[in-house]
Structures are given as structure tokens and as C-alpha cells.
Image (cartoon, rainbow, N blue to C red; front, side, top):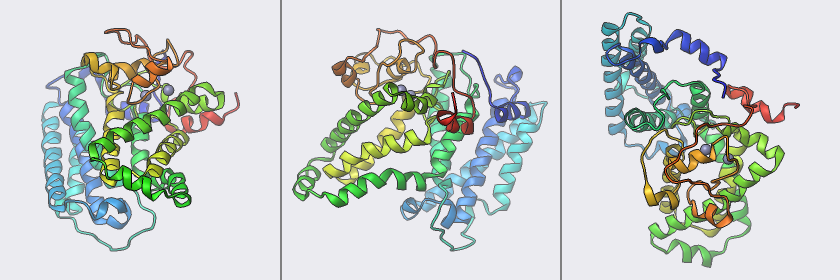
Length: 378
Ligand SMILES: [Zn+2]
Ligand SMILES: [Zn+2]
């Protein structure tokens, strides 16, 4: 498989990345972490300063503010410390200076005490809060895991394609308002037409854990068949091919999905869930589970799950879905039993796929190029 970097990624790599000297003690890790945390700190301060524009309306009232301010303070402190460490250790100062610059900017703009500069609440919001919090959480969980227990040891954090995947992650979060609106549209419209109260009462009265399991089953049955259609119908495959264009799998590869697929898949999954009338706590539990699990099954970790491989999709199971060969296996996102049932399971004991991607590598690199790809003339 060709190793390709988009033009933006080449530029960033030239500016910051110096893989020749990225080992422990070179100031590369501290510098990279400093830039990352400095950027997040600045995003946090912007969200605190303009909450009506840069925070998600649905989350705004729920935030534990003292905790978030303490977290912001910690992130700013860590950004200063790590960037300074990198400055001391490293000959090239670009990482350390950038990290310090971001941390200073966050501090000058108010730091952890930043207060709302305006009470204007825009009807259109950018989910900067959602992006900063989720990226921090995912990076803190998955980056150390993938460094400590990698399945493929040659996969670095800034492997080819990371800027493309990072862009997907960013857009999926920043556009959370628009995506949520579109995702809920079919389910809420249908629920207005058909409201079987007796069914809702019966389902929502069950223990939350039962409802959670039922949602996972319902969601994955719908997902399984839509996913199979995305592979079987040529016009749909051109859209889904984006997801399969990753030649490296890690925690960042999961969000690489065409926006049409993101919206259609999520919205169709929600239709039966809304019509059946599950209670909110079960639905929220499912949303938390699915956002973690979707990242996990792409991650580059070598854990062996034994019998669990056959009951809950694990990284090894989903990695086979991304194999160049065999194709069209392991469609289920959560429950491998569906693949067993419908004859599409492929899970040789203890084996991992040798190569990921699509035969012939037809999809271009870069977010924009990939959004246009399904509609380009062949
Ligand atoms: Zn697929
Ligand atoms: Zn995948």
C-alpha cells in the first residue's frame, strides 16, 4: 500500500515533526504534548469567553464548571511545563516555542478564570467545548495504550493520514449541532406521526441495563444491514470506501467517514430506538458506549480477548473488516453474532490482517478530496 501524506500534512510534518530524533529524552514528546495541551487550553479559554457561540447548547447547562476550570488550569500548567522541558532538551525550538506561545495566549486571554465576554447566544453554535473535552479524554486514554501495548509496533502517533483523520475528528465535533439536527430529523419526524404510548410505557419501565442491551441489539441489526448495503451497492460503496481507505488503523482512524455516511447511518439507527421509546438514561448510556467502542475497535492495541472476540466486536475483529483481503467480512459494529448468523464472519484464531485498505488504493488523501471523491467522474 502506498504511504501518502496530504499536502497539509506534509507542511505540518516539515514544520514540526522530526522523526529522526523523536526518541525518549529528545524533547520531542514533551514538545508535542505541550503544543497539543496549549492548543486545547486556548480552545477552552475561547469556549469560556464566548459560550453562546463556542459551546454546545445542550451541554451548556449540565457542565460542572468548578471542575472544568480546575481542569483548564491543569492543562495550562502542564502545557507550560512540557513546552519548557522541550525547550531545554531539544535543539530545534519550534515545538517548545509554539507550546509556550499557546499557553501564554490562553493565560493572557483569562486562563482558568476566563469569564463570558458577551451574553450573545447564537442560534448556530460550534462544538469547541465538545471537541476539546473529547479529544483530551481520547488522547489521554488511547495514546498511552497504543504506545504501551501496540499490535503493530511500526505505527507512530503521527503516521501518514493523521491530519486527514484529525480533520474528521475535529469537524465531527465542531459541527455537532448541525450533525445532531440532521441525525435526529428522521426519528423525530416519524415519532410525531406514530406514538404508541403503550409500547413506550412498557419498554421504558424495564430496568435501564435491559434497555441498554436492547438498544445495542436493535442498533446493530440496523447497522449491519445498512453497512452491508454500503458494501454491496456500487454508488454507496464509493461513499463507504472513504472509511476503508485507511492503511493504518489506530484510535484516530475511526471517524474517517463521509459526512453522508455519518448522517445516514446514525439517523437510521435512531429511528427504531425512538419509535420503541427507550428511556433517556439507557439512550445516553448507549451514546457514551458507542462513542468509546467505535474508537476502541479501530485502535492499534494487541490485547487478546479470547472468547469475548465472538460476543463483542474487539479491535482484532474489526481490523479484519478493514483487511485488503478477504473483503466483505465482519459487518457488525458491536455484536459478531450477527456475522455468524448471516454468514459473514471471518476471525481466524489469533491472526491479524497483514495489510489494511482497498486493493488498488483508489481514494485520495485529505478531507476535502475524500468528500468529493464519491461524486467525481470515474
Ligand atoms: Zn465497511
Ligand atoms: Zn472501521
